[in-house]
Length: 259
Image 1: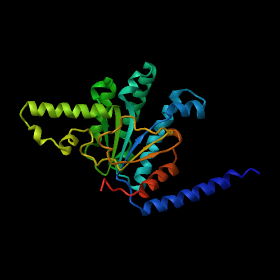
Image 2: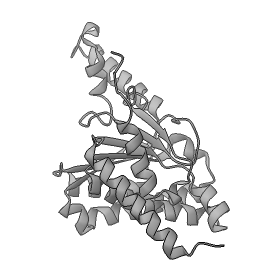
Image 3: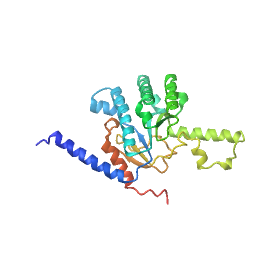
Image 4: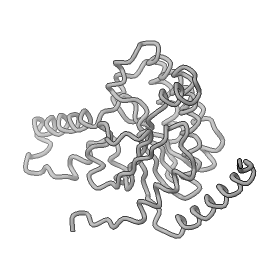
């Protein structure tokens, strides 16, 4: 016998409420980093459509997840939107993605909710690789939110973790060459200060959607002690209950930091 949808929906809602209550009683991660994976597979397997539909659903999901973070008081959300390796995709898809990201951040910059919740936006990555119109949009959005500190949204675009470390080494090498510092002064803090996220806490929790079990060159330096969580669901299909389960998993772990 098939169970009526209204009954399963009520059971789902009840479980979600219970899980949310349990999560809110525990320690909430201050910073969550997400590898948003699975847009194209979601389009092909679930929507039976082209990849653009999957990317559009993924954009909508990011807005939703930011609201979830605010709901449970996660102060910082960092997401991997476009890697340096993604430039090797078909030119039409790359152009579509940058147009979609431009639309997203312009909407974010002008959205009343952004200013009501005082969310600061940072776009991290190799900005010299950005198309001109996208670079202008980034400057506009970052300027409009630069004075906010209640919440932070960091979107990694044209980003690679190894490339970020190389950038830091080059900048430190230049300071040594110019006599601004001595090689013996280099420590972990020195390197951290040259990372895109130097003003932010390192991620407490990194989660990846789509079932893939790797971190794909994302925040390599910053995730030295992050807890990892892999959700076997494509990014557009990621649910609030999946989000809560990730946080509950984080809460159930003992973070010793090597001690």
